[in-house]
Length: 312
Image (cartoon, rainbow, N blue to C red; front, side, top):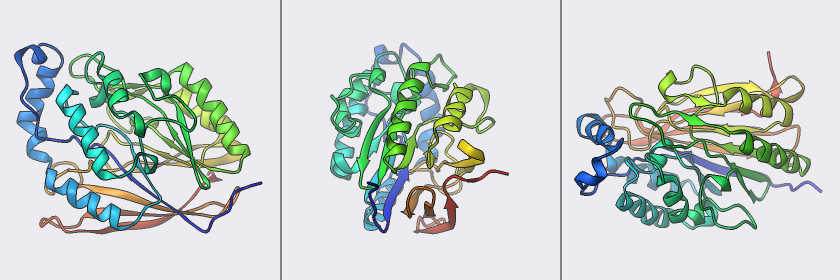
């Protein structure tokens, strides 16, 4: 029997990049972190306003979402102190059963970092009835919340300096196919969370997702109702092919602390109100965030998305 409910409210934000950076030792800088540290000093710390994160999250919580989807990059260089700071921040945001997290490339900045993030943030990345994650092998996970299946995929991996690419593996694809089939047969609205955009041309080659074709082929065969991502720091809506001539919306979001007047769009979050049922889902979609140079938070835009609309 399909679950019915009038409306589910889902909030989505990403790329928190919590700061400021804690004290860092020379030993910790003897890695890819040296380039990230220089980038932080020259660019990121100037373009991120961490007071905005508080205002964004206050507005988000005031909207009373049923669930929050966070698509990665909680930290900057994946220092141990950053990872612990992010854990405390998540705890201040809300209970773990109301917040689902997938890691981003900054959370897996150097070898071993992804496993440390998984252990520290385990409560926010544990699937229903599953053991807490210890590393990339725990993904994808699935959480059922009322009439939604919230599915977390990891594209995060450590890369060489000046690269920020992600990877969607064959192993994850096999697991994701089974999850999509099971939750689809149950009549659930399937939300897939991934950090890197699974869309060609969404970002430049050094930051791309390896496995885009694999991901899109899987969605074409098994279906989904909505894909959420971060990484680009841009508000975008793409569509990829779904089964039987349909298309699936793929929605990105600006960085949660992006300052007004910087090169990228200022901070906002996405708010989805999901109505209907299998074959007739509707998604009322609004972006809420910085509307002026004073940091005022309000609605930026709104639209009606249709899950699985006919392509073409």
